[in-house]
Length: 86
Image (spheres, helix red, strand yellow):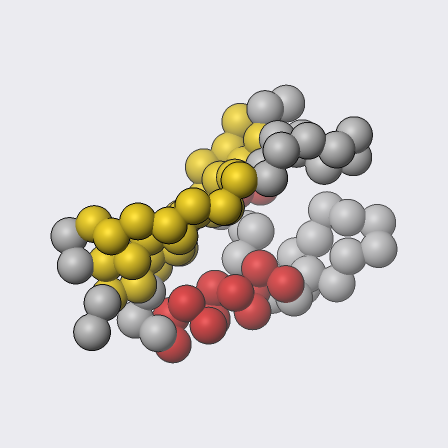
């Protein structure tokens, strides 16, 4: 969030899953980039490496979870992670 803003982290239990949401008020992700944000080495940041979200994606998979991204340009992004409760 280049100009600061609110970062909201929330959890809940839904349908036998732990749901973790991370929501920001940043610049958002354009629709054409959303499918690629989890690809290894993909970045739009000048000094980015492109390994952060790819690593998160792999860790979530290894725990039988799911990750989704919802974003609106100019308003922010929400990443939602879901993990089965054992």
